[in-house]
Image (cartoon, rainbow, N blue to C red; front, side, top):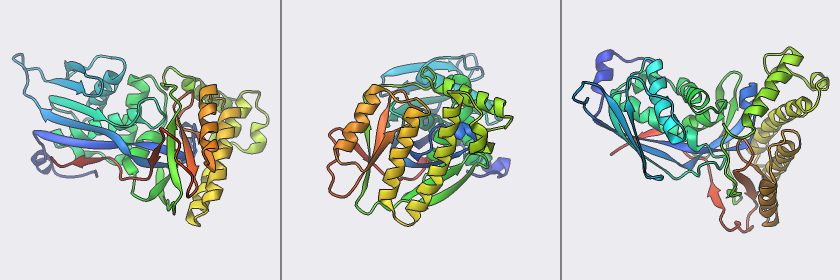
Length: 363
């Protein structure tokens, strides 16, 4: 995806069928840092969402429509292309993506959408962002306009869907991770500059695994938005545009729980830099220690863990993981563990590794 291209060339790329895949993500270090202009170390994973889009002709009234079928749920949706109404659940993401493409001047065409995914929903691995990005890529390709938007702007579009249509005030971590993923590379993301740098992820017999706590979470209905409000209030009291601009001495002025929220953000930013340094020299025990530190901060300073999540972290560590922490925005979901060589993978856990980012598929 790049800017430019003549109208004729763009029209030539319009299709009757397009298929796109967008991966979920695992954040190694850096939760609740994205909306604070901070840092994160993340990777795209093999699991994700695939969208098959087929062009359909306008109805007898001349109006174009979108029909969507979520295979995993065996649920359907249909709405007018010109004015998608609000909805809940997965329908909010479909309608929001169509609406935001139009708002960006990238008008989609009438389409029949088939959606399937294998990234767990509500597990902290960004199933919603994978859905947004796969939908956008397929619809752009169907209309022949994929060359008119770059990856970072597409990430912003996905974030608007999340914020304005699904009611979750997330940052850009999930979308950037899905779009910029690379094989054998972790992504150091700077949310102030929106730069993405690669960090080699050579595990050398170590394994990254995720284990679902079984406790479902949804950003819009959890305490996620409340944590974001608390960080914004901390910025107001400090007179800074974001917590990225605050220093350790400054945040000591904050009352609880704002002090704790700010302390987590600053400490996780520092842990991202130390994690990148550890990866560059192959210090996987050092990375494991950072996972443990990050979890303690998420539990104690961000206050987003639960007894069920804590039991899952303990199960991961008891199985031999050198480091473990909760994944995602908190209040449920999965746990990430780093297992040394020869440690047994806990029952029900799945191994993850860095994979290629969102893309169009053949066929």
